[in-house]
Every structure is written in structure tokens, then in C-alpha cells.
Length: 277
Image 1 (tube, rainbow, N blue to C red):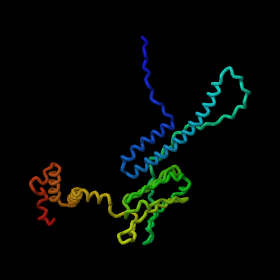
Image 2 (image 1 turned 45 degrees about the horizontal axis):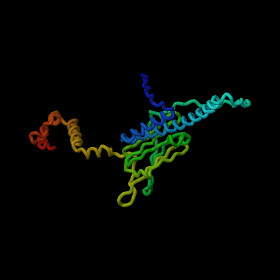
Image 3 (image 1 turned 90 degrees about the horizontal axis):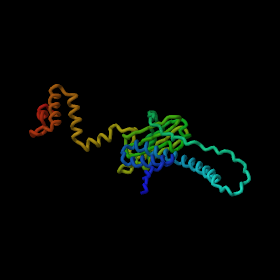
Image 4 (image 1 turned 180 degrees about the vertical axis):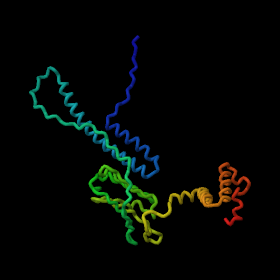
């Protein structure tokens, strides 16, 4: 009987460039699951960086493969063939070693100084001027800005060994994302936010960059009235006297135990009408 030895199939060994592409593919699959604009921007920039590194590694691998192919063809020459005349020895070709990709900075220096220009009454945009010396000398891909109807997220990577970020998610007015853009100058970045038009055809009036009220909190309170009531009760508790704090504390405890409203009333707050509240 002939014994057949099972050969365990070895997993395919990926080249360095294939490893980079696989990493980029894996990150791209995760991006649709993330809803924070700034996190998506970081990941998309990381994917671009990994893709560029993979392309560079592919060129290096191709150069190595070409050199190895020349050496193999010389060794495979039949022994009976006449020896060729000695050829001049070519100068050695320097093959760059594979360099580990430079990962984008994980820490961003917050940009806290900029100039805001609301423009004139009829201007279609408002402008934010961000002074960054020598910003025009870095690759354009290092400068990104993501726009949503109520926010923008400007990121400048690897400028003089640092990365910078200016984000605002509570703009004074909503913006037109398709009419918003950035301009990169030698020593500054200009963020242009497209104004929305009112129902009368004129542009929204901007008095400042950041809105006075948090739009996200306002929308969340509108979607969840109970949260607004609890905020009001907390404020009343903080500002009330001992009797008020006792009644509110009892009511909140009943709500926690699921007993609030069981007796058809508002628990300890049922007598607030007598207090003029």
C-alpha cells in the first residue's frame, strides 16, 4: 500500500504592495459604517496614503523582478552552448529598499486664530482666512475640507512636522455644500462657505461664524421632548429651595422606578400649581 501524505496548503504570501492594498480595502469597508464627518475624512485620507505607498512598492517589486529574471536566464543557458564573448559588466543598479509608509499624524493642532469675513449683503459666500506659513509648498492632497449643511472640517497634514485642524459644526447659518470650497495660497488657506438664499431671493445674513445656539441640541430636544422636560426639572432643582428640591427628587425617583403617573398625577410635582409654577 502506498501511503499518500497530505500536503497542508500554505496560505498565499502577499507581497508588501499587496499587503498595503489589502489594508486599504479593509479600511474602505469600514468607512460606510461611520457617521462622524471628521472620522470619515481621517480614514479616507489614510486610504489615499496607503494606496500611494502600495503603488511605490509595486514599482520597486517590478524592478527587483526584472533583475532576478536576467540572472535566472543566464543560469538556465544550456551547457553545450558556446560560451558567449564576455560582455562589459554593467554598473550595479541601486534598488531602493522598501520604506515603511509614513502614517498621517494622529494628533492635530487646533487652529484657534483665523479671520472671518461675512462679505457684503449680496455676496454669495462668507470667507475664513487661515494663516499657515508655507502651506502652499506641501502636496495639495495634504489639505482637505469636508462640508455639510451645518459644518466644515479643514485638515492640513504634515506641514513643518505638524498637522492642523479647524472644525465648526455649529455654523451661524446653513450652507450650500456644492458652492463651498477652499483656496490654497502660499501662506494661507481660504475657506469659502456658500450662502443659502431666503424665500425672498436674498442671501442669508451672517453676523458671525458660529451660531449662538447649538442646532444639534435643539433638534435632539425637539425629537425627544422628555429630555427637555428633564433638563428643565434639573434646572429647577439646582435653583430651587429645599422644599422644591425634595419634591423634584421624589418625582425623579418615581420616574426611575417606573411609578411616575401610576396614581394619575405628577407625583410630588402635583402641587406646583399652588406655588405659581
